[in-house]
Length: 120
Image (cartoon, rainbow, N blue to C red; front, side, top):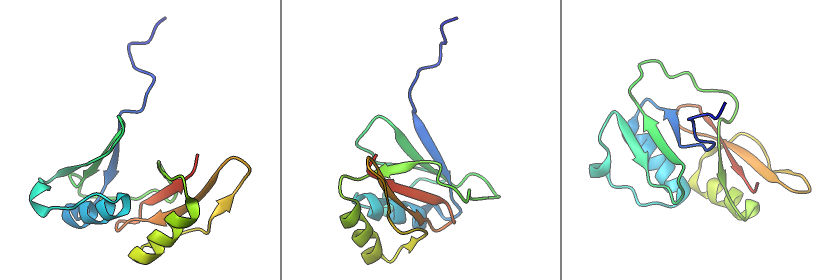
């Protein structure tokens, strides 16, 4: 039977407690300008350059972050990305892991969500 559901990831929802702080944190991470006037609780649509969207969602009272990354943000330069995150003062959860075809490291957002930065 043919599925009516498309074979593509559409939007990632990230549960957060402080929508303005998280919007600023994620905007800095991906190099997008942050303007508080663009934040309209309880959700914030993070500006992305691809079809897959990211929505910060402060609509839940209980935020229970996953100890494992649920998504990754792409980079072509893992070393420059690691240095950038260090300069931002973000919590780095793992050193760069290098394999033949992929490299990655994990960071932690303000609510404890684990975010992977990855070359693959």
